[in-house]
Image 1 (cartoon, rainbow, N blue to C red):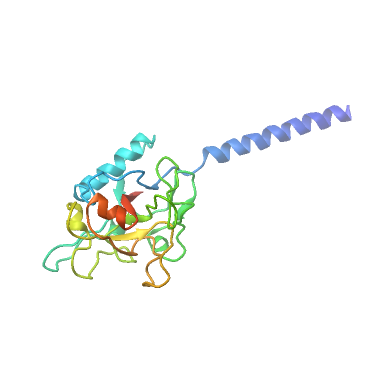
Image 2: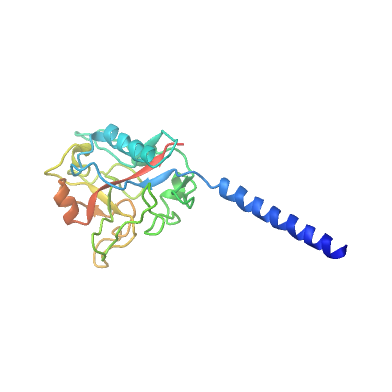
Length: 222
């Protein structure tokens, strides 16, 4: 009788642990952050902020996401010195998780601190794919942002957003490095996820030449 009780107890314990595992799996945070698996194909001409947001939403929907409030992490500037749009103000309050449930940042301040978790392992596409980084064939670690390290529009002067994301030839845009790797003999920002350097141009070929592919960060504005 004692052995039967032990067997029953063991089965109950196993069932409980399996149920807990299923519950934990079911409670995985939904994807609220990804790097676009592809650009729009016309360099940094994304159709402005509206076109970029639409691109994020289309990719998320194709990947099975039911969330619809996706926003591209992009800043814009206004000619004449007027205030532009800050990428950090477009993306909600957080927290944000990648497709595998890993937390990228708990809030906007965390995202723009050294504590944020965007790197080569966690900076995944909406499909869960990693991207080639610095020193690897097909490197695409340049992600379009047009932003300074705090996620604000740039006051550096000149074109920093490829004409507010409408140019595909001349111009330049600030990019970040998703793999957090930069050249040692350059500025201290080169390893920044959102503000490493300016692109060589706005065309697809020029973005590729400086280590990019017209990719963008997408967040749910929760």
